[in-house]
Image (cartoon, rainbow, N blue to C red; front, top):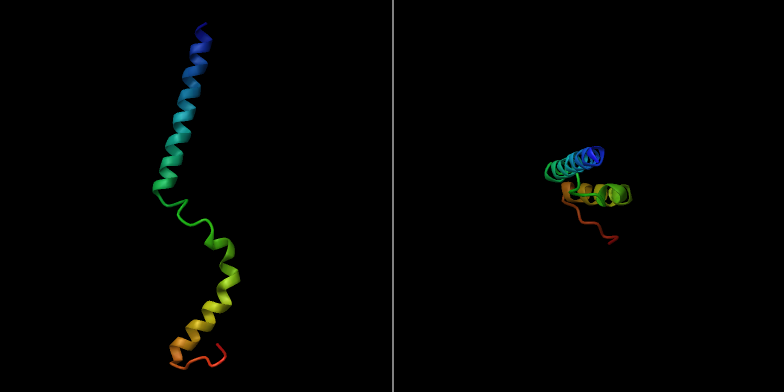
Length: 63
């Protein structure tokens, strides 16, 4: 019977450790933006085009 209490105590300690690790990761910003990095490569050309047009002061007549 003592081993059951020991195993329950160990499992609670492990669960608390995972909870603390999750809370630490959430507070340090690990889960802030998980969508944009995966699609950023799809929009890089558009961003470079917009930045080059705005830096020179010229408007883009094709749009």
